Image 1 (cartoon, rainbow, N blue to C red):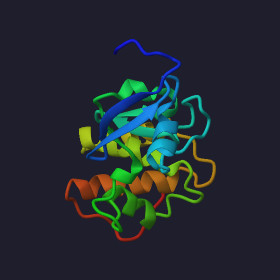
Image 2 (image 1 turned 60 degrees about the vertical axis):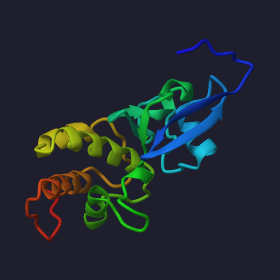
Image 3 (image 1 turned 30 degrees about the vertical axis):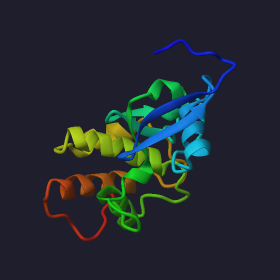
Length: 174
């Protein structure tokens, strides 16, 4: 990384949800702020600003990362994906998003984007994840409204659908 001058703004270029993106930031700008305020990606939420709640989770080069702990200048040349990138096209939900909807796996929705991003990254690398695996994945996220049972049920269903397996029509939370 080149030496940065704190008194100047710097252009950072990367891929965002499959498209080239550029944003001008101060060296101290957090990635959450660059995404939300510089690029309008408001699905990435700022909760605790300490990396503990998981609401700001995105993927950087395919791996989940807390955007509130990442400096925007650190993602130069990286491939970023936010919750806005999960939908296959405008107006359609991705597999995980649709499963969350079917299972009522969200209430206020504040934590949902981060949980979706962690699950998406995990399932891309481990499509045969078990219920226990998926429970561990969301263990790094705080949800104050929904409770975790419908979230886990949605994740299990989405994993099966992504593998091409049939699923139950009726949500279960056991």
